[in-house]
Length: 274
Length: 285
Image (cartoon, rainbow over all chains, first blue to last red; front, side, top):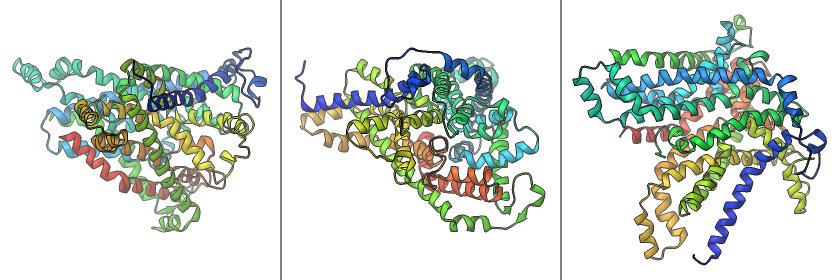
């Protein structure tokens, strides 16, 4: 055991303070979601109170949160499946076929990462309005898939490049077609990459506000839009909105514990290996 | 042939949701019209752009966006890289537990982050004010004053995004060879020298990627501001995205809003295009 120095004590103080700073705001909302109004509206934070599930019951019965939950699951799942299928095929095409201009095309897809949601939303809103799809889930589904596409393509290109060339060549000699090589040789190896892309794409869609805010209407609201309708109000019903927020974020915080290792590699499109 | 077939779906998505809408936005930005009155569009050529660069509120939004990006980016990089460096030479299991705790805010939706911090900053019940009172610091105006609102949003943003920097910087740090740190120890280098002579230079590539990802996100910020202040008070926190949104859906000036959103896109390409080029080339190697 080394003797504690001033430096190591300061380091521990900083790390523990950072824990407090991270946890307290989350804990506060989670606690509020189980509090009655009289326990929330106190000038000194209360730690001891009689817990209640009223806020959750209200959120799911009065505020229609069950429906928003279902909408969010549908949007996140469908847009993620679309972007993974489309993105993985594109990545396969761009890495294993010696396509002319493959690098330029890949770079073109990457440009999509620079486009702000607002620049797409305004014209897309007009277009979707014009073809009568406003208020359906089609708007957010296609929008989320498109916004996730650049990172999925680049992430999958990284994973496919890491598959040893010899494996594909051996399969080719055995008489496999290109698509057989993909399904039998490459796909099983890149499965961890597909899983990472799946989780990251799901979370983007689950959390995305701006597209859904304008492309959906009351019965197609997703969770973030439902929550925004609470915080947008002049006076916020803290109990109800805390319950809604907790029910929306806790599943993702738990998922986060499991996929944490892949977040660095996934969100940087493979530029940083975790 | 098969390769092109495999590319078609991706191209179709990009054309429908990116290229066509952006083309339409570019076209519509040359007209003056409100939503639902597409048959009464008035061609004004570049007037919307001229208006943007002469409108004090628009210019203020541009300034706010730049200020927010610089403050948020530099703070979350400093905090994130700092914590990652502290975690680096720690007992592995302890560092992993701490990192798991620190990572908790990453996957929380920005609109929920805004809800959390609305409560933290609530003048009557908020923890921030309770803490400030404990230290005898009353009268902090928080989100209600145009002087402090933006920095309050930056703090909430750093809470949300620094964890991501910690994870990525930690991953970047693991590939720096241990021998370099051994050599520094033998030479009796102090921690600051180690940081600036070894750690940061070898982290450059990772930092560039982080600046690209976090910088573009900060420049596009909508959700957090929408939930915390809606752009107020007195436009003190209006970002470009918020401004274009308000022009489109509150002031009903579609053409002008499209011009504002195109300006936002142009700024992003000019500011971050070079970073994108760099990181794309690195990965292509």
